[in-house]
View 1 (spheres, rainbow, N blue to C red):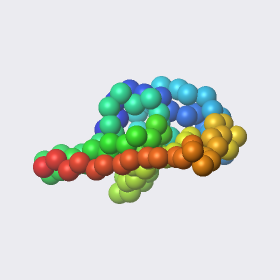
View 2 (cartoon, rainbow, N blue to C red):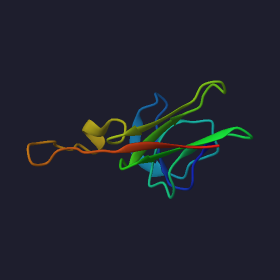
View 3 (cartoon, rainbow, N blue to C red):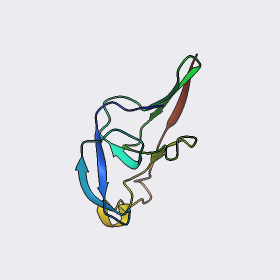
View 4 (cartoon, rainbow, N blue to C red):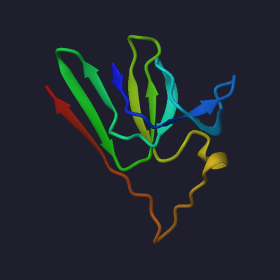
Length: 105
């Protein structure tokens, strides 16, 4: 079970391409990119373990379709970032990111 607290999700068109519009996330399952999360996303297996993903990045893709598959992936920008939010990386202006996984039994 993926645990997300508030935030926004990028709406995508019928072909799965993000439109750039941010909307409130509906209940999962998801194959979407999220941003503005109030807390770090987590994955919980009730009665077993919880994994929390802490990252300096502002975008996280969550994929949990079909039920037996799961991916929580931090991104350096939104999907289709070249068109939605291009960022130039240059000497003196590098892209730095951190990701930490916390395991709670």
